[in-house]
Length: 75
Length: 155
Image (tube, rainbow over all chains, first blue to last red; front, side, top):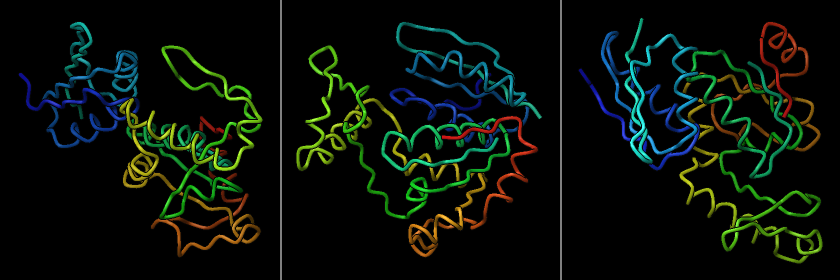
């Protein structure tokens, strides 16, 4: 169940992470943020971001040049 | 995390502000200590430049490959403007943020910005022309903060 979608396509490091952090701040714990991204470096970075901040990376998938992440806000 | 920021050119402005804004987004406490030429990065109006002079590693993407920028080209009048405009175009084209935006992201997410008092006096900088929220302090303040940090970088 996606609460909000962030379109970060065309943005380069570290903007997708900064915007995702901002968007997660507007969600309640348990709600899910979807991030669309074109930066291939984001694959490693969203993993690191979620491990460090304690948010849950529910899924990540790649569809050609498009990366899609589902992040659940925790705590 | 603490960063000592000593350089003020367009290329070297990126690493400290990228790391600071990202670390803040990852819930880390961040302090940036600006000294010598890094002080210029705190000015309200940034007019950053980059030169190939003295930087033999500089390669610019061109015609599907890279071309080297020989030192003597960098010595020609007006070349700093040319290389700076080239890099700003590349930055805009690649979806890379501006230095101003990264700096603002760092500032609003609570990154502590400290300007070095001694080099401000030495180089004639005043806080009036700097962005809001800049503290002025010295080496002891930086060190007191750094001793508790897991990551301390000199850039």
